[in-house]
Amino acid sequence: MPLYRFGDCRPTVAPTAYISDSARVIGDVVIGEDCYIGHGVILRGDYGSIRIGPGTAIEENAVVHIRPDGISLIGERVTIGHGAIIHGNRIADYVPLTA
Image 1 (cartoon, rainbow, N blue to C red):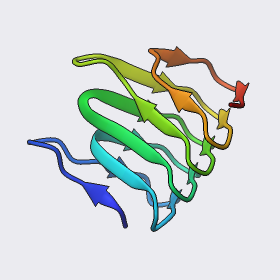
Image 2 (spheres, rainbow, N blue to C red):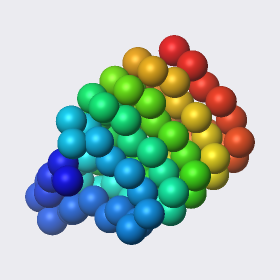
Image 3 (cartoon, rainbow, N blue to C red):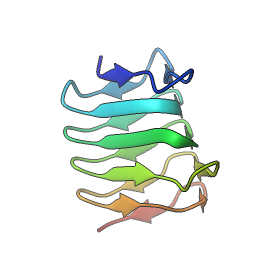
């Protein structure tokens, strides 16, 4: 699985989540149950934190990052479309986003 420690932080992934071998999950990232993390996705929890709710799909080549010491909360059953760049604090439950 493409999980990378950053400093003292390492990703936490629910056992039912799928993460593509070509994705990169870095640092303080928590991925919930039944999530889909597609090919080429980058989840950068290097200087901030990322929390991904259950049933969320982050599709191919999307990037999620957050400002230093910030937290990006992605809700339950959210779809982040192909190639999207997310650099925000919160996405509510059941929101479909496309690039």
